[in-house]
Image 1 (cartoon, rainbow, N blue to C red):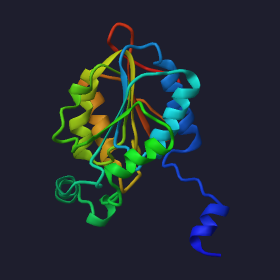
Image 2 (cartoon, rainbow, N blue to C red):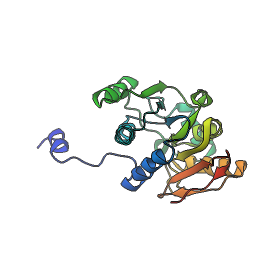
Image 3 (cartoon, rainbow, N blue to C red):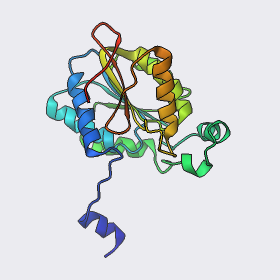
Image 4 (tube, rainbow, N blue to C red):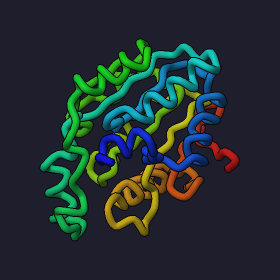
Length: 218
């Protein structure tokens, strides 16, 4: 049996998030469904999670605009250089996601009947994420320290009272993507926000109705 036929007959789990993590993201969508603002997924690769969350939104009647921001060409050379020079990483550990194109992402959305997603091809380090405001829910998944560090304060400014931001890869034991964990921990400490990591590696930032940071149950 060819590898292509085997994948078709015996499909494999292909999400980068675990089932409990996907359930948690769906709960965040429900919790912020009445909060002002759209939804942003920063770092979406080929769109598997984008499709899943948008299908959930369809099922729950959540009709908000959904921004998907990515380079659509993998980790940038400057971000990798930073990891090597300042975080003592081996280059091969922090490169990836290069087999991708925005037109493939757009086709995936079209093939799945998803029209609300606005795909933006951009380097997070160069793009003004505040321009996406207002936002009610954010999934930040850019893996490395430099783009996560830059994105967090801008996205926090775009987040409306009652909103939730989830930062992926907040696991200090992950030798590949622990830069996101370091950036998240530095950000909440600098802002005086509670540090909360749920479902193994999802860092949480939440604003209450008064616009202040709050915690949420796991």
